[in-house]
Amino acid sequence: MITLSGKSVFGGVAIGKIAFYKRQEKQVRRYRVEDTEAEVARFEEAQETAIAQLGE
Image (tube, rainbow, N blue to C red; front, top):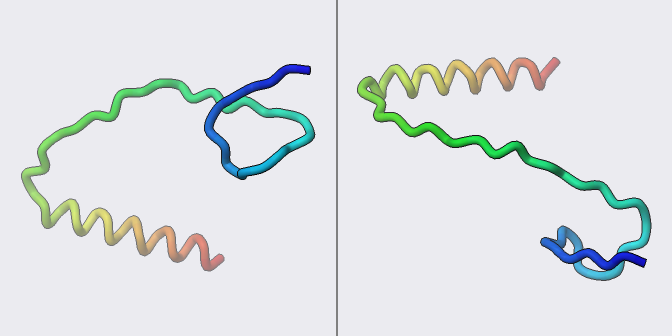
């Protein structure tokens, strides 16, 4: 028997197959936005597109 420890999603005892999630480490790039109105418009357009896709 192998005992593993880590972050739990559900408290209690679990029996079954285990799956490992491996994340590729990537850096989050930060940059300053000069035109905030254009960014808000870009967000709203993406939001409308997502709502339309989810409605289909």
